[in-house]
Amino acid sequence: MDKLLIKQCLFYGSWLVWPFMAWLLWRLRHRHARGWLVLLLAGCLLFAWARFVEPQRIRVQQTVLDGTGAPLRLVLISDIHLGVYKDAAYLRRLVDRINTLQADAVVIAGDFTYEPDGASLQAMFAPLAGLRRPSYAVLGNHDQQAPGPDIDTELRAALAGHGVTVIEGTSVTLGGFRLAGLGDRWADRDDPGFLSGVPSALPTLVLTHNPDSAIRLDPRQTVLVLAGHTHGGQIRLPWIYRHVIPSRYGFDRGEQYLATPEGRVRVYTTVGTGEIGLPMRLFNPPTIDLLDLRP
Image 1 (spheres, rainbow, N blue to C red):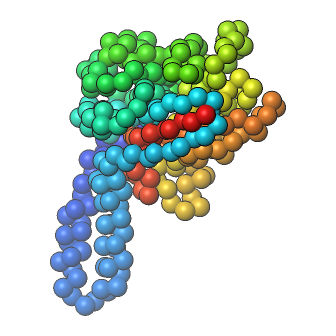
Image 2: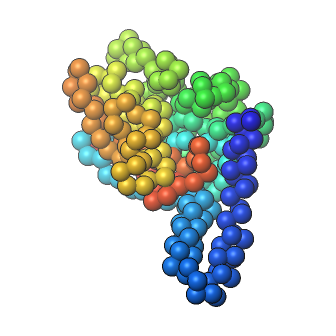
């Protein structure tokens, strides 16, 4: 069976939980096996929350990061994953929420899509044109490489048309920082060699999709890495979620340090705003990170 069809069946078939819960409530009138019915109903309620409520929430997580060398307020988002599970209407809500925040810029750490199935990326990402702050991005594995499809060229054109600058393999000056972008690690596009080729007196922020890309960075050249990719486990069941996070170096969410051959690199990983695999989130809502960088 086609993978996209399976995901669509999961997405729409999950609505059957509502009539099933109604049937369980009807059965509760009888005393027979009432304990099991209560347990089933509780499980269904948890499923309904994870499927229908939590993925639609938008949480703002404000974090102060001291010792970055200069002041800056950034909005960090990632893993929007528009396509089979989320659409432009959700992105419009996300943009509206971002516009209420006081920030100097918006940075997007890749994975814009998830099974777009030939839809117009120009139309899908039109809400990004409403961002009221300078916006910079890199692409992720769902944009550039398997499980793809590789929509790199079309996506870059759509983002540029809506005012989002893709900075993969290059850098821009942002406040008192140099903001540099690395491509996706799984697509082998995260070579940081250009950072040494064009030295800067400014402290360097690195925007990348996969936090594992930090292993290739020199902490003497990088004060902070901003990443996504992990989803924080997405369905954050205790002890289980860590085994499904696609990180070789143990990245999860929030601020962490990675020991590299050159020293410790500081990394901040956002949990993202979209979903892959199952159209669910649990104990881990879609999040906009508002980062307050301080000297």
